[in-house]
Amino acid sequence: MAALFQYQPQVHRDGKVYTPDLLVAHARIHAGGHIGNAETPLPVDRLMVGTNLQQVGSEAHGVAALVVIGGGDGDHEGPLLTVGSLHGHGGDLLACAKPLSRQAWRLADVAGHLDRIILRGWHLTGDARIEASEESITLDAESLAATKRETLIFHSAKKAATSAGSTDGFEATLEDPVLERSISLTYAVELLA
Image (cartoon, rainbow, N blue to C red):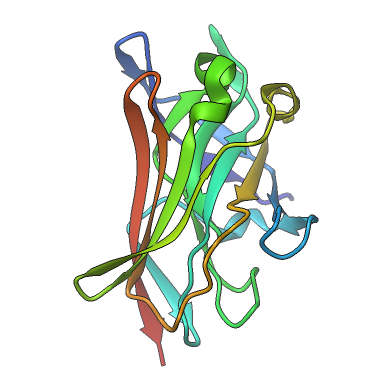
């Protein structure tokens, strides 16, 4: 029996919010410039929607990512976009959970200005908010639209800063200056001894 992750995003469209039930059977990481231009399979049991992440080990580190979820529901066909974090430690990208936001947009709503959307990330330590990345989306809408149903892909920030040490948490946003809206993700990290 295959593992499945149930994703229930809050999708804002035409002044309304709806919450589709999407099943994710396949997840991948497209690391871009972070750890080479490669795709890595990701077990769906690593996916999470939440504000707290437990980690064994030290040096908690997040990397902002554009997340594409293939699928559709009735009148709202096509992929969704959200923001997530490729959380890891000690170079082991698969060791930790991968948080993603509950907020999402339809790709069709932003496809015409995808290059204007900004992906940002910050390391949170104590009261400090340290910038980790800021870049425009350079992926084309056509390739994102080809994402298959029940598939989720993390596209990491290409110029993500390496953490100077362990952080207390991470924040990531997708900002759309054309439609004047944003999607955010903030989570705390609990290091387990």
